[in-house]
Image 1: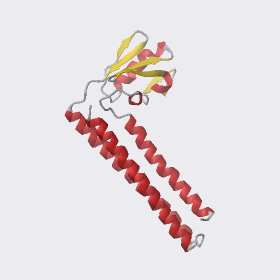
Image 2: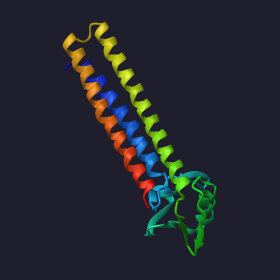
Image 3: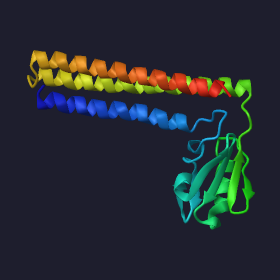
Image 4: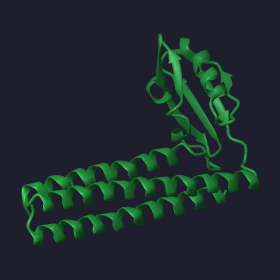
Length: 188
């Protein structure tokens, strides 16, 4: 395989893998029935004149399966953290407990579980579309290089096969992530 092909494939692989990684990050923030620091660590808190992620401002623990304990590194930003949690779309009600905040997650209703499950499937489909767009762009780059006589016929076919093989692996990974998250949501 020549350098031009390797460059195109490396760019495709990097961008396509980022799409899957982004999906994993989004899934980490979707509420299941159990407490997880990933549920709140992305919440933006206004502190010290800037917006920062909660994970950078506090230690987040799971003392019980349905409870999060948030201990700010600086107790003076406790109110700002409380406000950020209240205004987030998680629908959680924080309770200040001395120098920490406790979040108790109520059990999800069957209707909420179905909505979250549908959201997970939609996000999975969006990731698949992003992946297909990356494949299209990589195939166009390979075809352009082939048309400009920068690639031999063999390298052209090999590159297209490699792109498709990597695509299949990433689609399977997305499928697995969606299935796993759906099971997490639907079971208690």
